[in-house]
View 1: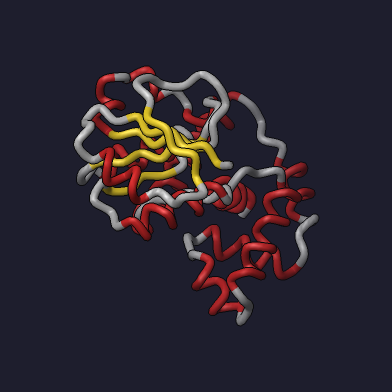
View 2: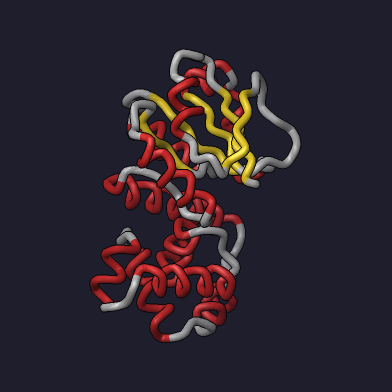
Length: 207
């Protein structure tokens, strides 16, 4: 069973979030950042303010992190995603939207406002560009990985690069949502990337 931990400085919203989480999840409340492996930790922005060390690269943690808050600034959201957080959503989201966010994250996707996708990708590209100043990027290897994709997987990857969601990709290519997900899963494996954000970044670097 998927384990979800709730770490909130403000306890008021907790009952709502516990009630909103689907029954198939094993939900627990915690008072500190866990050190052992869990599936997802939902943490509020007030806790992040009190624990600045948590802004280490989230990708180094043993779980995926969904941040919740009230009108958290776009810059903070982008910073969190760039540092490896799995997503951000408003604390007053509906139960159905919360479940959708969690299911997306469990599939290896990120959850963020659509208008911020290109900003996150751009920030990651800039970070990688700075790294390239100190070490050469093996583009030959990256292009060889890209050649592993089928023609349809490549089409899907290119649409992910520009920030399209699965529904729009399916409509544009005249295929089902399930087929899009299958192509993405295959592309992640072939390109050795974790999620659609890393896929988009790789596509940007190669193009």
